[in-house]
View (cartoon, rainbow, N blue to C red):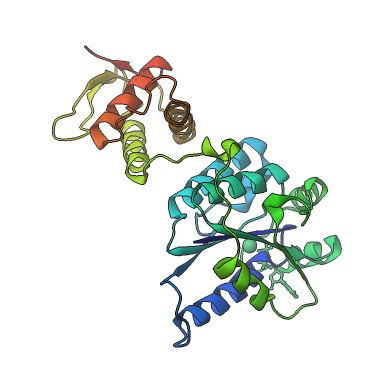
Length: 296
Ligand code: ADP
Ligand code: MG
């Protein structure tokens, strides 16, 4: 239905505003006078995914964390949901990526820019008692790299700016944007972000978890119990496979296959996203990438 993207400096009050907004939306949607479609409001944030602030101290960890958030966002996008993304979204490219995914799902969009001065953010950050503060260095770094949103570009608009001095969010305007705003059709650029069906992602997750659990056994010949009928014998490396390398493989795999589907190049729409077939293709993919050997 709609995607509300928050953006703002670290510790600028994004979560505070997201809570205010969710409260308003929930009240309006359950009000007897509301006659629109039945909608639920979901807030996704680093905290909802247990992503620690220290991930922002390291660019590789940050990229992994962003990938996890984007995966979660794609899973939650839907016609019956108002999805609020309470995250830094500090790079233009990130906001553009969210916008493209939203168009793909035919969602209405808007951006909420939570503004506080760097000085206030530093103070609020240092005063936090919720364990969700950033280190001073990371905070300054993120502020320096922050790319301001603009109502002139399509992926940030409509844009609602909420300065720290405001007591509340502009609910009337946001409500109008999420319930009446234009829905733009996906364009050529966005069609490549088709998502795999969520059960396919779930299967990939299961295979990764299973592999990680059984890896690290010297001479590792194991049988992977993927399903009733799919139980391949594989040889694993002697070292333990890490969750992050498996996640990377998973993301690459999804990307490769999405391309194949949308461009009709390799498999020409015949990709079978059934559980078995996905699990099988994924372990073949891992073999091609020399992570495992499938014993014939
Ligand atoms: P973010 O989600 O952007 O990291 P939070 O909403 O968690 O920021 O706010 C960080 C800290 O700043 C919290 O302790 C909060 O109470 C305080 N804070 C946020 N917005 C304001 C505001 N407008 N005025 C005063 N304090 C605020
Ligand atoms: Mg927050």
